[in-house]
Image (cartoon, rainbow, N blue to C red; front, side, top):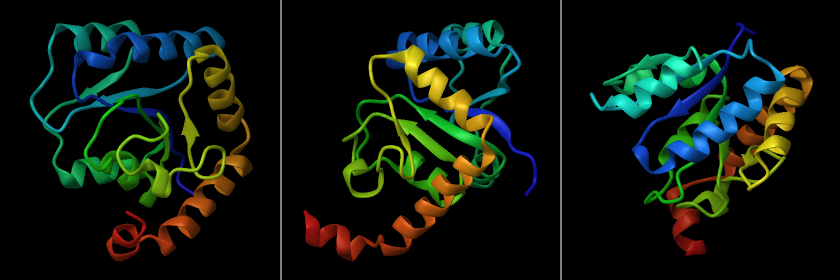
Length: 168
């Protein structure tokens, strides 16, 4: 396996900056060496995201096209996706397909169809300290990350738009 960077954050808008910052604060309190990348699919990059990038010494990738996004998923262990709404929830689903474990809210978009806490993803709750400990535990236990990845592949193999439509 090629060494992956630690944490990738999909930046959709400012609505989740406080929660994102809180989670990152807890993670970096426990490990200040964590590698963070923040990306957006547009040129969106206001002062709030730039300040967050600076505070956590993160790399910022703006205007990420599909190829860049796929490479980001393939080169990171986790995708932090704190959004509480999304039509279908494509970023976590895409990251799962690339072996990048999503950290997301349960029941966002179609997450109930493909996201199983501690099986192929990690669900965000209000205890960010506990979440940070879980992330760092996994980063230090690569076999556990491989289990999550393998479970993601098993789960996604069963996934199809036809089956999803039947469940709705």
